[in-house]
Length: 85
View 1 (cartoon, rainbow, N blue to C red):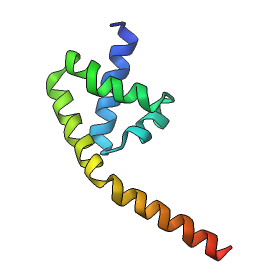
View 2: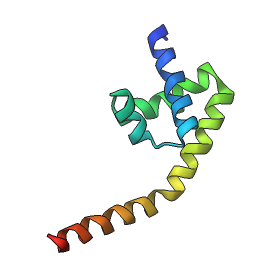
View 3: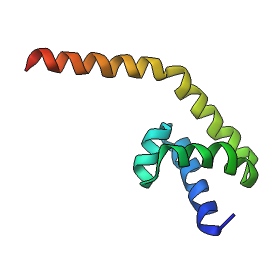
View 4: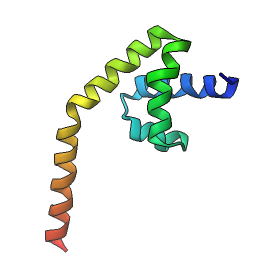
């Protein structure tokens, strides 16, 4: 794996852990696709730093459990704004 990819993978993992952020937010922050972020933290990170991969996995698992709530809130906001206009 190239050095710049390794550095990116570690930076993304630390960002996700430090900010308890989602894959989507990390992708926006680093200017890459969600697919790339997902591949970085699920595949590449495990090869580079297994303990960091485990910590990142915990954050991603929490996000996965809560995503239906965030989706519902986003839909609610969307329809509240439509009725106000």
